[in-house]
Image (tube, rainbow over all chains, first blue to last red; front, side, top):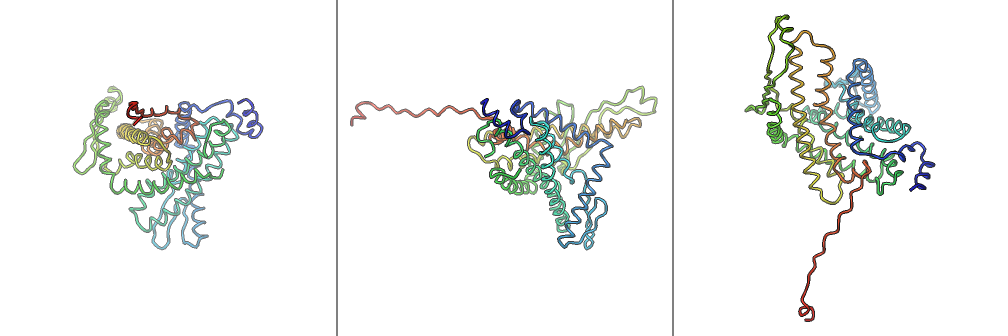
Length: 190
Length: 219
């Protein structure tokens, strides 16, 4: 066991903290809950409002640019996408910009015992993965809303949010797998 | 951080199952699950002195006792103290509190695995119902204090922030996160692959021993 630890320390210095600590599920869950409470408390803080609004505006601009590049016609006004033909418009708000799922994923990564370098890598990669899918969601909702409001409501309120949560779970699973392999958990993430 | 075979397979299965289960839930199961949620909320609501009644059109009616500001301060401001608040909530608002069930089932079945699947499916389903009940009661308790806050001129910004935060957590964050946390906590695959826990080996089933008489075996 001692030899194994030394070899993993050489091959993966960024994940070195794992060797010293084990996942204690109860402790992880409590730390995760605390991180979630703080993360959403910060999201609700007045000084964060302009930041999240700017973030939503940028995502809407990117969505508009992607639709334009694919040959679609769309008008972008701040965080609003408008179809010139039908007049249908959608606005990107807090839930639609993926910050809920990002906050949950970041909290899970911060609460998990790992080195800070590995956590930072996970946060960056996880954010990118979530936002790529979030752009697909926003663009698909823009077209779905022009087709059927009932299906738009279903996809907007329930389906896409949970699909992105499943994506976040997979990102977390991928991020955790090397840590568990280094710690010698057999069959981890085969 | 490219997805491995297990993660790819899980993501594809989970996406397909989420589309199927959430569609079935949205179009067919919402009404019976809302009724189950209301029935399950009766006992904890009674403990909180809250009355939750189901109206003929499916909406819910809440009767919630509240603690108002000090009577002296209210009298000085020319206001009467409020002891209870009554309000109705439209049925579709309870959808998010029953959504955890189809999501949990989709994720748990997508994760596959062998062994006693029914046990954690039943436990997980009961947990989703319990979390839904807690979220509904806490959410509308906060909502009641929000109404009271609007009736009082001296409401602080911090109080309004705390209510908005509490409502968001109970209405959006917990219903979204609960099925995922439950499946990670209960499913053997995620217990092993995410929490690093190994299930203890079960004792081998006792073999059925057939003792035949010497006469029978000799024949």
